[in-house]
Image (cartoon, rainbow over all chains, first blue to last red; front, top):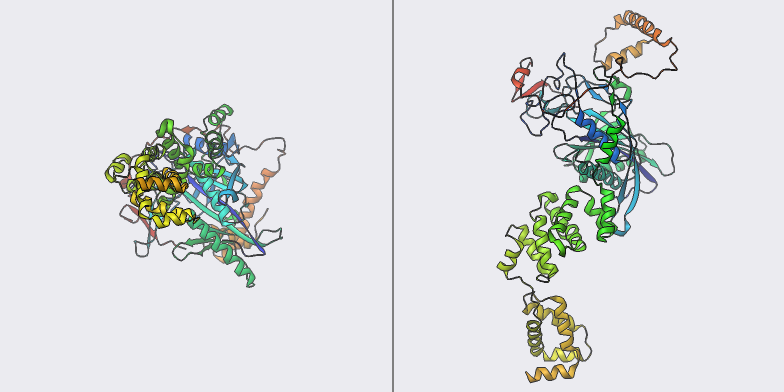
Length: 498
Length: 95
């Protein structure tokens, strides 16, 4: 959606990323999703008196990896603070977070907005990323007048990734969130599951008239659990604020919840000012020190990240910039592409695979709302299918039919080709016989064609294809038809002789 | 620094503490006396020193990422006023 003329939006995102550790950030309780309520909440998570937090080394490593991946400064010394507020899903009365000395400072990611040739790149700066503990969950629905509290999530390690307010449209904000989502999965530090709350995006949105240098008053939009909703929530909020100001009103600083059913944001609470949290250093935790050589080892351990992978696809496989970007935009997509390529062996055709993965497969996944790792057509099956395209057994059209059958779970590609008799006709003699038959049946059209009515070529192609039940190799068919129709005298004579 | 009555009420609100208006002057007097005492900490000249994040000049020990806790829900919920289906029940909190 484009923004109303004369206005611009300023958007910054805060992304809460659950780190994929086995145990919690300050206790030895498990972090697995979906367990019985409060079965993974120990005395530390419950904030019982006399307990002390002990920091999980893996959470520190994962946060540092993120910092290294975005080119940020990873603090060799960082500290924890208490953020005080009252809410029953936070039984200690404070959240352990990092304010004054976060573990990750700065960093950048490059986003790409728009499709194909029109894609534009933009660099987004990160303010910081800090370690903190997640809160529990409140269930308001099931108990008359009461709220149920499940503290299994309390103490799950998070990094909160804060961007500068540098995005100017919902599309840019989504591109940025997707890029961070891809990176944390490439790094293996977060499972990225938005439905389960592993990756939660809050958007700070304000608007101002073009040319204004002062930032407008911002609102924070929460409760967005998909990229699609993020885009819609921000668009809604931008328009709401513009209309409010144009009608003479003022935007109030507040937290708003997105309601996907109504496609609108609603006020949740007026925002407490930062000093209301009464941050102070947590006396239970000492400064976290990372040795320079440890940081170097972590740097060396970084996997190939999306930007580097996309650049490699362009040089190594001669793929277009856009195809490379799409294929590397999620770790699972890149893995699928690479597995298909490997499974095709010597006959591997990167461009062909790229077309199928970003075209037919992506469309089908999108239609059914599936992730690529839920694809009914495995990378191995796609490889076997495309081998039959490469060796001319199947035309692209027939391959699409086999793909649909694979999607429906009808067996292996070769079994489907056999069972359905889909093998492409590549025997030139057979194609010539069919062409001769069709031409003999339509002497008037042949005469018209030869008299200059070129358009009839397609008519003949259609008839031969129909006779071949769609299985004639299109290129061979064209060649045979052209030579048969080509020179009048000979062709007619031959046909007459038969 | 010293607090005025308005700041005192603000701090009380943040802490969810009910304040008896009549007690405000006495509370202000006591709190300001405490603040004045603590303010002596501003006097030493410390410009040449790097601030410490913690009085112990040590770094945080880390633990390995291992699950060491078992499900101890029954025992841990014994002190809870109300429990149902494994959840702690509290007065309704929804904004």
